[in-house]
Image (tube, rainbow, N blue to C red; front, side, top):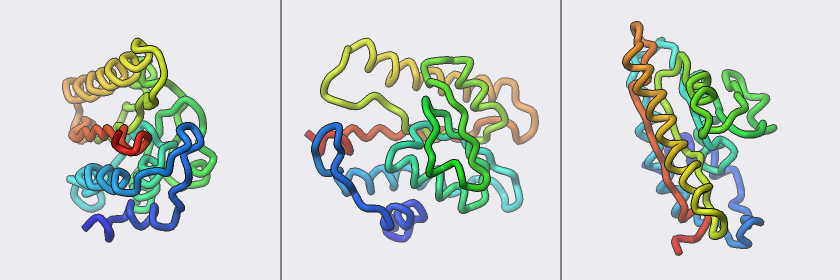
Length: 178
């Protein structure tokens, strides 16, 4: 059940503020749909006691923050690839913030090194912007992450491959489904 999900528990303690960029109330239903999508990744496919390292993009988002906190609470190592540090995550045990951009293949590969899974939440959302910027972030950035996962599998040594990739696309969070 989403309500009993660890990420939902984290988010239930937070208010759903007005998004100052779009002057719109964040859609709680869209956030919960995102949580259900992430639940696959949050149920570890690894046996108890195995060191799990997960790369998370978009950790500064509402869903991303909840996912990172739930993974850290479970005891996983979390690598957050983001353009700027997130103060609220800095104090969490097991969370490493790497500064970089998903459009930079080298930065993505560095962040993915030693990871067992990727949860990809980063995206360019909005109603204004250049088409090329949307494509470079949302398409090329996602392609870079998929290539890093594929490369990890090809060069795998026991338990060092990325075996799970979860991509969450939730523009309705920013646009109220319109």
